[in-house]
Image (tube, rainbow, N blue to C red):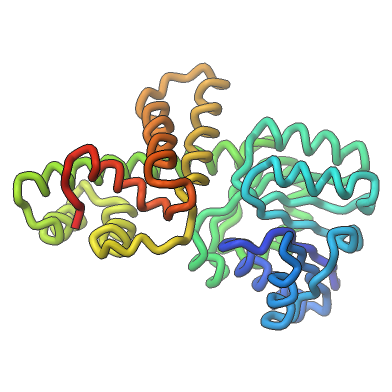
Length: 295
């Protein structure tokens, strides 16, 4: 059955995710509508992938609306602009790394209009989006998810993790665990650098042993040791995610001193290094604290 899908937000993740949807709807005889705050970017997407660039008001024709915006605040803004205009029976899938409380509030508001809501943040980065192999963690009604599972063309793995807001909670904890690993690795490598150890050699053995992690295997060798820090995901957004994770901890009345401390450290890094820098540049603050470069 042909479907009309809409994708809101063509950033580093949204651009390739929407491209996967366009390929999917081309094969199934459907349509993919794309919207971005900068219309020129939507036009470029349409030229490259065969999607249809539209004004925001036009996404009301969609059976399924995907959003992938910087924060839940921007999602609130587009929902407000579309209030009362969405088609009853539509499904809104928010792939933003948002706030669990916002998901519950947004879901309740849409339900009054006959629109279902799923919070479905993703993990895997732009490369995973381009390959169609993203991991999607979904909160909300499991039956609604089953009805749209075939539309998640950018996904390699889709897991229902719980009620509304659970997807955002899992994503925040996931990103913060990565942040913990990166910060700890940075501290360890900075200490080794101060003793004169060759960090390339150190990482070679660490990555063959029990200390390995995604940051030691990929991020630090490709971004930090090279001093390139290519911009793929902003440090300020990772700090935001760590802050959401801290909120999850507080709401659960849990004890998580490491996660809470890391949230503070990344907030400090965003202020010191710059929120617009790549997230790997958080280790520049570790370097400043130790008076060495990790290279």
